[in-house]
Image (cartoon, rainbow, N blue to C red; front, side):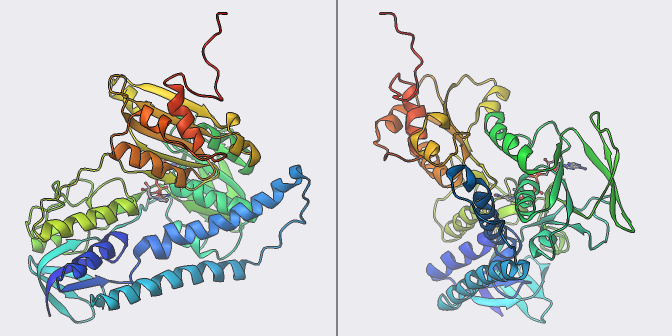
Length: 467
Ligand code: NAD
């Protein structure tokens, strides 16, 4: 079988690339081990986790409604129905993608592909594909740690946790990163006693502390315990559960027995067992495929995008790279030059940021102006009972240009898009301040943060009156 473009891996990076290439008139073949396009994001990641987080939000809101004079009976959770609803959402989206694939006449091949040389891929369904160009978009998998990822039905990775087989009475979450906190939030809402153990001194290490603080405070009320600066050194299966050994300066009980463990200590690129060496494609010491600013590997007609081509491992970064690679293949002068890649942690509150944050600016010794707007001063946040949020702007002191936007609060994942646009369009804080934001909405927290830099904020009082 001959093709202009082979796309290996049909996640949000791979299918975005395949669809654009087909729209540009190329003959495209897309290969994936799963039965339909969608990848880890659709089948075992972003989408099912967001469906479950939506259910968690409903549960939490019924608990909190009492303070509004609305008393609900405790929710009765039908785990089978919840699982079926989540699976239906995934199936609907996967079927839509499969239809788009067919409509665009992208040739679909289900199976595992390995390179035989720099122009041939062998698929384990018996097909061989000869390609002119190739985009590798094979994604990533959960990191396995020998003492933690033991073969036991009680020890889960993110895929296992999303299956929602049961609600364990107690769940130990190893890793206070994206997955640990999102899935910890789901299981805590369903009724599990959740303990999070994080190796470093902060949840979501590397994220601006002003954004993490409101999340940490709220999770302390929802989780049984959060251990920071603590390592889960070992887990063992015992008769009544899993025994975990914790190590750290603040650990008072080094051993705990729990029902289930979720290991969420990061992901690694899927670059092994692809036959990359036969194609001559180089990887770095972490296993990421090396690419240039056009997403070309060292073999000039083979490209790599998404998680397998480097951090951050985010679906929207993969999609953008996929389209870029197709433009390059079509001979356009495209390069990878986003001003920012937004990140969202879908906890409650949501945490979202884009561009340069204050902690990074400090590390770089870069002088910046910072504006913070605490949501206690927002009418909309107060009507939602969520004055715990914060909006933050990082601005260049010379040019007034917005360099970074950080948000913590419900809906932060939606609100961050304004920040992305502002950064990409080289908006100044004054531009944002002078753009009329609708009232009463949470978007005003961004415009008021911008206004505060120019002494214009209505709901913040900073300047001392002299007369
Ligand atoms: P992560 O890197 O976000 O967090 C892993 C955490 O585990 C780190 O904080 C690390 O310090 C800690 N850790 C490592 N070893 C440990 C040990 N032995 N004991 C205790 N803690 C330990 O990784 P993740 O949560 O597995 O997610 C992987 C990637 O998937 C993310 O980096 C992100 O790119 C992606 N993801 C994104 C989203 C989203 O966009 N909302 C959601 C889920 C996953």
